[in-house]
Image 1 (cartoon, rainbow, N blue to C red):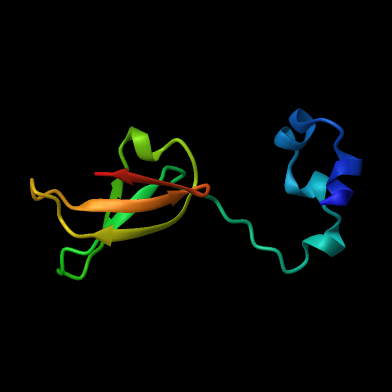
Image 2 (tube, helix red, strand yellow):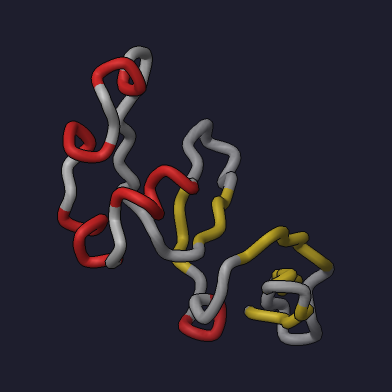
Length: 94
């Protein structure tokens, strides 16, 4: 945001600033403050009991953002594979 670039010359200033120091009261009207509780790349499993189970991907799946994933057929050893697109590079994680 161009207005933030003018207000904060250094990232450290922005990182330690509170919302009230960043935006005017007019800009803050109607805002909601959200917090991220999980920052790792994960997959959801549906064990068909009505509750989804969250699983973190292995370290090889944590190196970049995931833009999409598709579950594909099991391999010979019976382990289901996940095909993921990581910043325009296709890789396979088990």
